[in-house]
Length: 300
Length: 276
Ligand SMILES: Nc1ncnc2c1ncn2[C@@H]1O[C@H](COP(=O)(O)OP(=O)(O)OP(=O)(O)O)[C@@H](O)[C@H]1O
Ligand SMILES: [Mg+2]
Image: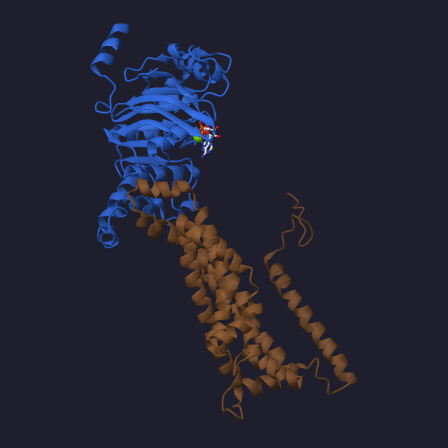
């Protein structure tokens, strides 16, 4: 078992060529506060990555870096070998809020991605096709009857479904989501989780999903990344208090049905993640992180 | 049945029924008119020639004279010619300041360069009391239409520009980034995302600026004009014609209320998402 993993690492040397998303030695500093300390990450096409970690550890920051909304203090980030510079259509985003444009109807919000890349006059001439395609996506999130409403007329869950459709119509290489279901009630939340899994399968997407809910992370992902500032560094003990977050655990996951949430294995996994990333008393050294995923690598 | 413990008028939880709301809204007007009539009546009993508080009949006569009789000297219907010249000035002035304020505010909100160049200056300009520089305006732009329009313009555009600037800055960064991930160019962000979102705010700001626009209009007409609502009020003041003054004040208030109402309706109908 162990040697299998080893050999697959050798075959698949993590690099900007073999992986859709490749992040190496990325550091992010705000003022004199190190938020992210040396993040190494490679993601294969089709993966559903979930990212969990304690509040304030820098999950949203990492997402903003991948999105291109901010640039790293140092390090390298590429998508399909190309360096990330600015936000662009190949990386879609669904935020917890502010994803929808309040002055456009639901249908117009979804059509926008078909029209914005074109010059104004062409945007008008493709209107009809854009409408049809947008309707199709609206149906796939089961909101066709609300096409002509404005975002404020929909519930939070419906708005997030629109935001997902709005991002999907661009067919992004990678879809980034920052706690997209964080403000929803448990019932709606579960329905949304099932929906996003369905869309992920149908479209063969690559998703990078930030959540502070461990259950959600373990349930949705094919791979879970835990980032945390709770760890020690043998080589340098001074910075223990104010050090930036690292990826402290990285496991492949295999979960397929909603029933899985009740199994004992699911519970044990969550316990383990909680211990790895969320417990300030339990500190692992940088050399001992559980980086079991085959794409995982660490440049110390 | 649950007893609803709600009053019609007093307290935080008061819940006036619909008819009662209408009555409440009308009540202050009725009181004002009632007090006026009683006071006017008292003064007329003491002195039938009283000029200070003319009776309704006198105001009616004044209305007939200014609105429905040709002026002997000019052959005009005074109220209408005054109204038209005043409206021309205020509409030109406010349209000018809406356009300039909007363009400036958008640019200040979007472009750090332009913001650096103009924000401090506009804030400074906004602190000049416009009426204090009225003589300068009259000297440099003449006592004709231009001087008056400039006063209205200078008095209102800094506020509009600053308000639009704030509205643009309040658009969350996430929304701009979102538009970029949907393939927008910088131009697309401005014309599809920012501009349409601040347009209703412009109408709202113009609505609120109309109050000071009227002030500047009347002030400039009072000082130098040949016609206009403010001009007439200050002209007939010499003859203590309270009847005409009251009539004109009522008319101006009516025009201002109509403008306010129409702008509010415009926003409500055209931009239903703006005040959800
Ligand atoms: N623009 C900024 N300027 C300065 N500090 C920032 C900025 N953005 C984030 N931070 C800091 O970076 C740290 C990480 O923030 P981030 O929002 O990424 O956390 P998070 O993991 O997403 O937390 P949460 O789970 O609460 O969303 C926080 O301590 C925050 O104070
Ligand atoms: Mg966050």
